[in-house]
Length: 164
Image (cartoon, rainbow, N blue to C red):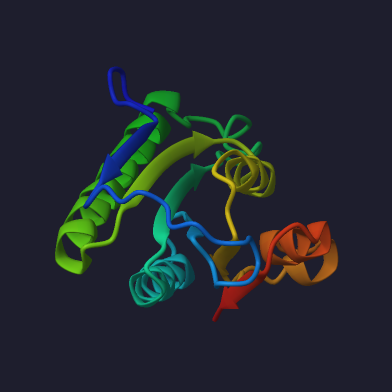
């Protein structure tokens, strides 16, 4: 993350939570994982619409995970990788701000680095998410080792929606 940029920002209207019994009124906190891919953009749109219709808060978690192979590649500039991460995070942050204003949905933006599954799981627990939305993996290797979505479903702590 860039120096001085907070890893958590909140946008949109401030709402006090309505009294409800967890699990009976629909989701009050919808968490969506984004990483800049097409499927994560669709997942973000789906989650924003769901949050607006349900009157729920939206938590957008941008997770950047550098491949372990990038360090092994000759000529790979760690600074360039960091700049790319910062630029993508800033683009997602701007989109969250715009969406919060446009839809009137309270949005919390979290920027994390590391393993997508671990970071989404931790954020969902931290934010007390009632639902997790992620995009389907487009990587062929995930059929063998399991995708982030599959691992989240297996965790069994929240309903998980996988957007194609």
